[in-house]
Amino acid sequence: MPDSTLPTPADSDADHKALRIARAMAAKEGTTPALGLEIEAAGEGFARVAMRLSPGTLNGFGMAHGGMIFLLADTAFAYACNSRNVQTVAQHASISFIDAGRAGERIVAEAQERAVKGRTGVYAVSVFGEDGRIIAEFQGLSRTIGGPVIEEEQE
Amino acid sequence: MPDSTLPTPADSDADHKALRIARAMAAKEGTTPALGLEIEAAGEGFARVAMRLSPGTLNGFGMAHGGMIFLLADTAFAYACNSRNVQTVAQHASISFIDAGRAGERIVAEAQERAVKGRTGVYAVSVFGEDGRIIAEFQGLSRTIGGPVIEEEQE
Amino acid sequence: MPDSTLPTPADSDADHKALRIARAMAAKEGTTPALGLEIEAAGEGFARVAMRLSPGTLNGFGMAHGGMIFLLADTAFAYACNSRNVQTVAQHASISFIDAGRAGERIVAEAQERAVKGRTGVYAVSVFGEDGRIIAEFQGLSRTIGGPVIEEEQE
Amino acid sequence: MPDSTLPTPADSDADHKALRIARAMAAKEGTTPALGLEIEAAGEGFARVAMRLSPGTLNGFGMAHGGMIFLLADTAFAYACNSRNVQTVAQHASISFIDAGRAGERIVAEAQERAVKGRTGVYAVSVFGEDGRIIAEFQGLSRTIGGPVIEEEQE
Figure (cartoon, each protein chain N blue to C red):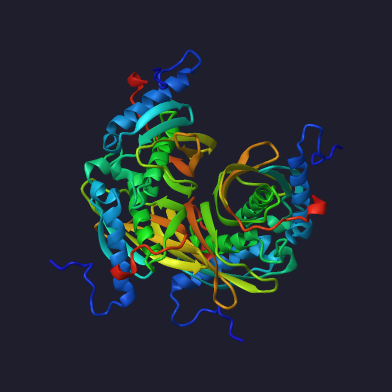
């Protein structure tokens, strides 16, 4: 089975670096093993992250808890806004819930940069179900605080 | 040590019912045992829920992951907007991140109703650290879909 | 000078109708003449509206008041979410301010549908300056209330 | 008729200064005369501003345009977050629309500080109708950029 995170010849150096950054961030996050989050792809200003809806992510209706849908979107947002190797944090985020995520389903969040000005960035994240339906739309506002995310030799 | 969720003589019947509803919701949620969420208090249009920041809730800086802070606030929001025993769901939520939550710290989200009109409700949720500092401010928009949350005999 | 709102051969019937709906809505709005709002384009799930930054739209720094930037985005959002001729209202909106709008500048808001499920819709609106820079990013949540926006014979 | 903005003996020096700052800001804003905005009260981290719903503020249903409700809330937010005489700007705002504002009605926005940490502030603004019903709930995120709003001798 192909590894969709493997760089392809079409990817730029910037995209390769973005993927290394996302993987380094994921490796240090407690949420990665706790929730089984998987980076599917990452590039400059972009990231796609997946989560299988295990029992611990469900609400009382047996559907994905809204907080877990948010967490997945927020994770993709974090990788996208740190993709140029300058430490950046979330300041604000909002989410609209459109459809339910079902127990056992593998849902995917795709973050895309919309605008950057100075230290401020805006990112749109869509969360999809396995069948491609939209589960949620998320918008994140980031602020660059400076310093590298990974060391230069790692770049 | 007193159990702060025990009804006191000052609590109304509506508040007693709200607490039973919150407990019934929590009992069915997969996130409750996975994250060790605890209901501290609940009343009509109100709920307070706590979470200990275990390793699985942390980001790469060893601080509370923003998604986990959101999940806690969203949980308190859910109990507050279902407190009158009419099934109600989250439509939209936004969160501003103010301060970090530290590993091992017990953080608390307090949800308060701001406005209800027809099937729409607006709730403000503040998330606090152990020392009372504000970690995040959350605003939720709910929509009533009808039907009871718990059966009448349970009420 | 070409009128960019004139339908072109490539436009679908649905897009022609969307433009008639947007124009009918604009004709009844008090804000249209008060602020000189102009519809630049409209289609199914889409609208672009412009505003010249007159003295009455400025803040104390002589820049576009944030509320006026929001109003322009909200107007494009309204035309986009009513474009299928079913009355639809805004429930929630959020906006991130990226850059300033200058006195006298003509700014443009472009609304695009992101997701629709049942009676709920999510729209992304970008506000641009004359030089194409992004001034603000807006996200709107709509709810369909039913009934036509314009009469059938007008369609 | 009493002027509700007149300081009373109970007001602190900080509140007196906040009112002078709000008035100085309003005097420079193009929106103040265009929309007839009136400062009703201002204090440290607090402001209340009113607007009469004139024809130019209405949507196609003859009700307050959502953008005008936002603008009023945003104005109160601006006075509240600049009330300590350090220049502060809006970064993000979100609004939930609860009820309609009627033609000719005088609506009021009341902004209250919820949290401040470093250069970041969070404010809740409620917009009320003449009968006290809630029309909208707004949440604003501010960032302090430094420098005084009014000169020291004005203070």
